[in-house]
Amino acid sequence: MGLTFWTWTVMITACLFFIAMSLKFRKKAGISFTHYAIAGGTLPFFLILFTDIATIMGVGNFIGHSAEGYKIGFANIPFVIGEQGAKVLFALVFAGFAARFTYHTLAELMNDLILRDRISRTLIAVLTSSIMLAWVSGQAMGLGALFATFTGADPLMMIIIFSLVFIVYTTIGGIYSVVWTDLIQGVLLVGLAIWFYFQVFSEIDFSLSTLQTGLADVGASGLMEFNLSIMEVLTLFVTGTFGVLAAQMYWQRCFAADSPKTASRAMLYSGIIAIIFTIMATISGMVVKTKNPDLDPNNAISWLILEEMTMVAALAFFTLIFMAAISSASSLLHSASVVIVNDLIIPNMKKKSDAYYVRLTRYSVALVGIFSIAAALLSDSIIGLFSLAYSMTGGGVIPVLIVGLLWKEKRSASFEMGTRNSRVSVWGGRIGIISGSVVSLAFGILWGVLASVVLTVVISLVLPKDPNAKLAGEMN
Image (cartoon, rainbow, N blue to C red; front, side):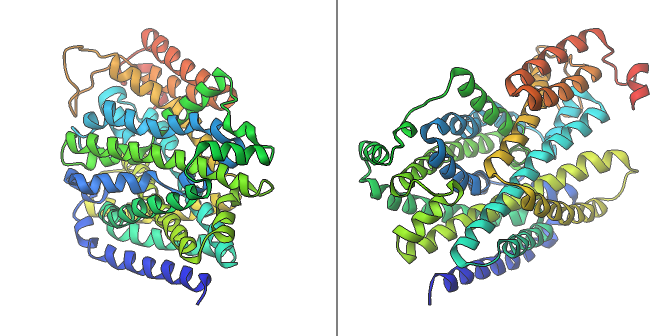
């Protein structure tokens, strides 16, 4: 029995197990919309830790960053530090704060504490959804390509099958299915990643000097250099940092945690793990470059596994990527669906029962899943897809959030649910979000952040703050 048989066996067994596991949580998830979305704010440390790890360590962290390592080498590190270091920043600055509340989404938090504006809430929801849809698409695309490499099967079929599985178990059990399957996936992911990178770095005798010599032999010694300008480094860092800070799934984990300490510790530890593993992924791409300098970068790590390692290593790597992809995809799919229902649908309809909202979110999971498949088939680059969403969302949402939290109406008063305490006006928030997003896409995220901050403050000073003011009311 060869690699193809065992690859199919692992995938099918895992899929059936995760679906069966989700059935156990169907009733609990259906208690209320809050339980379906954030488990009622009751999740303990071990579940938050491993769902953070499993969500963070997706296909892009292993396949995408190894491809970037193969192409540009150490020049990828600033983006890695920005993207993954943002989790540490989030843990130190935002996680404990967010865990004080039981909001369902970042858009709801900003609407309640800062903006009190339906249009701004809609804009935030659309932007935060985009970054998650990009991520879901990346997981499906990356795993489909890997599966095709390992088995020779059509990646289209793999993408469809893979998507159907995580759609089904996420639909059934909501966040309970996500975090409990993430617990298993996260433990396996960490163990397999450590073992796998040990195998990869043994190819260069665990020595950067050996790596440098190997790269020089194939005419790629430039990969060992940080050959980027200061502005390029700063842009990569800010793109990664602000994009992650706008990611709904990390806020949602904090809202679901049973205490601020649980949320901050879990995100801190998972962020450190992510930095280490992602840097290893970048270096592993450079290791492949020493072996074969003429590969398609997206296939670099797969080539190393299939041509240079044993079948056991190949199966372990596929299992690692499968766990990474399905855990991230389910988390992102669930978060995107909660945003759509909580911020785009519920505020614009008559009040319904919790049971109705749960059903609505389950329908949303299916629709978002279908959209993610289409996006995966149209995308050419995992990292490029991520970066586009990072820039748009990070440049538009996070500056308004930070200004809103720092520029308080009552400086000595703490933020409380149901109480607005920010000097950012309705129009300041709207213009800040739109301008930051547009300028980030047109001219880069650095200019987008600057435009958003300046216009948020200036417009808030000159236009009405009251959402019921005539000018704002006309727009609503």
